[in-house]
Length: 143
Image (cartoon, rainbow, N blue to C red):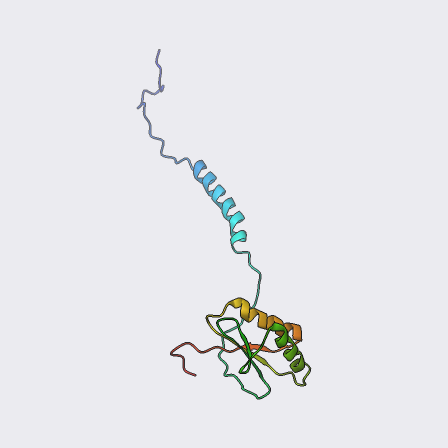
């Protein structure tokens, strides 16, 4: 009685085929993970961002210049205003003029964002439609 191949050949024959089932399983799992996570990562609101431009300020006598120093004090031209309500009252007078003057805000770079934000809010409350920020160009930029 013999236990083995009937032809009497080698007992250890080599199997030269590769089992690809685990590889396919791993690839399918990775595909599912990527399909789930990519829309989450790239989910953004489509907006058209403005292009950077440096336009010299057209200084007109009717423009309103408001300055905010580092302590948060508000100045109308060269005069310091007592409070935010005084600013709103002055801006309401300017808002009814035809054509409406532009408001240029000069905020100190060390001033808190909150201080400049109050000036913008005052312009909004008064009905000013054109508000601009005055900045200095970076060093080394030709004007």
